[in-house]
Amino acid sequence: MKTRTDPKLIYIAHKIELKANNKFRTYCRKAFGVRRLSYNWGINKLKENIHNGIQGPVIALKKEFNAIKREQYPYVMEVSKYASAQAFVNLGQAVSKFSEDREKKFVKFRFPKLKKRKKFGGSFYIGGDHVQIITGAQISKNLKNDSKKQYLKVPNFGPVQMRENLRLNGHICSVTISQNGNKIFAAFKIGITQEEYQRTHKIRDCEGTYLGIDLGLKNLITTNDGLIIDAPKNLRKNEKRIAHLQRKLDKKKHPRKKEDKKIFSKNFYKVSAELRKLHALVANKRNDYNQKISTVLASFYQYIAIESINLKGLLKNHCIAKSISDASFGKLKKLIKDKITHQGGTVVEADQFYPSSKTCSACGYIKNDLTLEDRTYICPKCGLKIDRDKNAAINLLHLISKQIIGLAEPKFKPADLEKVEKALSNNLIPHSRVDSGTK
Image (cartoon, rainbow, N blue to C red; front, side):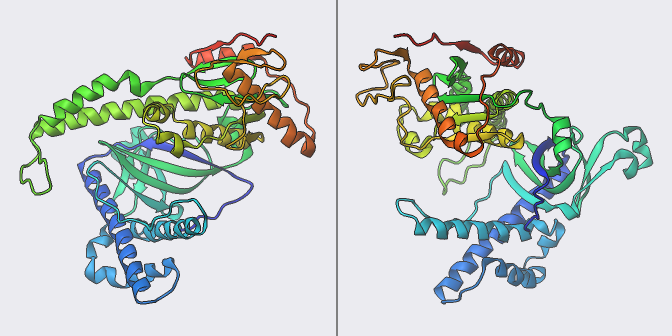
């Protein structure tokens, strides 16, 4: 289902864990299965139509499925109608992307694949017209003391208590219920006004501030003013524990091949749950770190220049692939862009081949023989000696003046670095400063 968007509203996601009992887990597994069934049915039907030379929009397949689902798949009616309907919307988006990628050069394209069953994962969508948030007093007289606690009323099931209340006042457009390990979450898409955003978020306290950011593996962020934010390396810190649990899991009784008829032992499920919990801890720590950094930067800077990184290409280098995945550059950049844009700021992204590291920030000389081992940039033309990452951040900062001054001519000014460092310290983010460049 396509959600209408209002340009006057800001759309925010709010993800909350649900207190799920066994009945609700069973309902979710049914809804996950219905979504998977609808999606796979659409792919098979689409391939059949292409083979027979029949053309038509993907969304038309939904009408065909609705005409037969009561007779051939009656269990589809036991869950929300959106579980099957939204699958065709997602399939249409996948086919559109396939068509766009096929027309582009040097881009790999692949026809949408069938979805597989996941024992501890899955998701389904509920439209905003079917989403209801109620309190305990509205459910039963026995819950009148829990009137402050909120419940999500799930179609064809009933109310499910949420771990926390919604912190945003606005229009609920949709909710996506997903499972991650043993936990089930509800992700709300809420449209809020600018006033509500200012009430619930920390607003930038100064205008015209600018920043150039260089991303790295050892130092996650290096700015043009010499501020360094360390990379957390959460995966590296828990690597030995993860390896230990994986070896322990492999020794438990479980089928080794597809034709193996062994059953999973109870100890296998116990160790598997412990391993999933550790992976979730690593992912949550990484996300929390990126959220805090992006919030601090959005609170003090209006214009930010950041480099463009070819993540797919870098991940092919197996020497640094694990460190790049652990740093989560893509997620960090997305959070910075979203939060800066919501506050009326601008993010300038450099071209992928922009020589930010090889260019001298003082005279503009390009040093083509610079290698990754050279951590200090020494300019042979003007004699500038500066930290490599700081030099790249200053060059990225020059993009702001090139792309923005000609449009709006804003008044640039540096942010108060002491306030930025204090905010980072309050969020327990390790940071330091790099020495200034010298000639």
